[in-house]
Length: 620
Image 1 (spheres, helix red, strand yellow):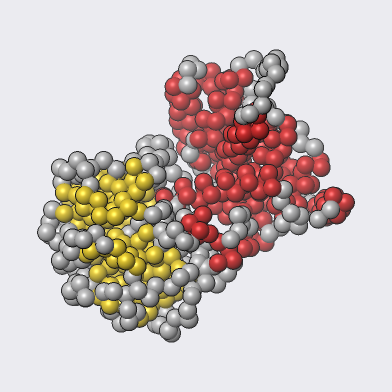
Image 2 (tube, rainbow, N blue to C red):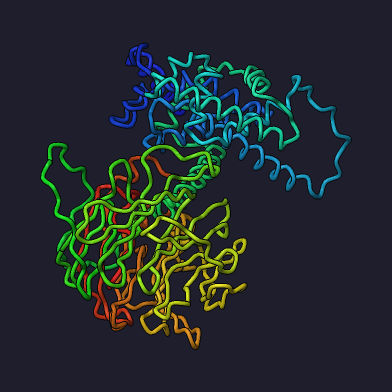
């Protein structure tokens, strides 16, 4: 597109925005709702106009460069356009966007510094010019920008509305749909957290001092041409400049991987969730019985659900977005479990060895918690057959997984507690008491499965960017490595065969470069424990992401779940909301132990390539 045509497009959009501008009384959340629900372009343009001064102010302070600030400004709103549906509650959009703007600007500054370093690495430099004069306390202001961006969304939303926008606590509470007391508590917590983090940077401020520095976080006047150009980019009516696309892609990818880890793996993760860019299956699958796609149950459905019965031998447990369901190996459904009220399933569940209990993970609906830092409110849910009320144990973490011990008396829970893949803790939970005790395994080892011998654990371990799958016992200091992991799949799944001599697990395929770019490459592999020989499971589709694996009780068959990968989406560097509106299917397959004679026994589909459909699979 030429400069003239770009200018004409921006001018036309600006005219349309002025002609159809939303009513001035609409709140930020209402405008965002219009954009999410109907892609209302004038509503988004009004958000750019309203929130632009705050965003540009952040970008200028963090980058200290006018051109970089404008690139970061446009990239931040591009991220909002593509992730608008993630903002909950919608009235917290100012706080959400503040965090995105600060992260985007920081990325712009880092990328610019690297580019300059490459350009001048072999050139003799002249004397450095005198530094630009900064406003008083510039270091404190920049530090507070970064720490405010690092706060959990619910705390940042309160700070932005009250401290930066100047709303009263009552007005801010009404906008966020909170009791005023809750809003006040969040403000107090945010001030304390910020003061503590600033102190760790060597900037000592009390709560009052933090409030004073808030006053220095000035907004910036946004040129009208920048408002119009940004709205045009977000709408997709003009090409995105390479500099802006690079920034937005980097931030979106980071957000996706973070959510992926939290939701299922990661979304999250994730997380999360596990596949941002699912694709077309390599072959037409046989027509299977269709498992219901995720859907809301009618509010007036008062009919009580009977308590689930014990699962008989050979029962499959499928985790899906609407809940968990037991099936026969032929796909006939038996019982269903749903997440407790006010929670959502993380698509991870296991049957106890005797088939009388089920354990699965859920997260509370709402924002992450502050303690531990940015932990998601995971809960372990244990249902016993014949009982309607489950045991629920609070397990805050960035993500969590669970599996039964060999005797079925306790549950091994793995929690991700830090920022790296190796920051995990393993505990053993007694469902009868709700108490946990530490499980001493090698540092960084995440339990994938418990061996039938009662002492061996199948684990995945990451040290930096290097991962491996192996075996460990309680008290071991090192993992007995069976194979290196070839890449990050969102979250690796793995199961020991009943005799402990083979491992069925998921790993990235290095040849799937586009899928690896998004962390979506995952196919099933078979590993012989004595020889450490690895081979691909047969008859697995090329353009598919494996999400869960399981052995039959006799070790003669396997089951796995997979989701389509859309090749045309994988090739993209960035996505808009409309890109994901593609019919996508997930499948449950039962096959011989080598993968041959594969039979699809259940499937479900959505008109969305991002949302999760199926998760883990278990077979008892």
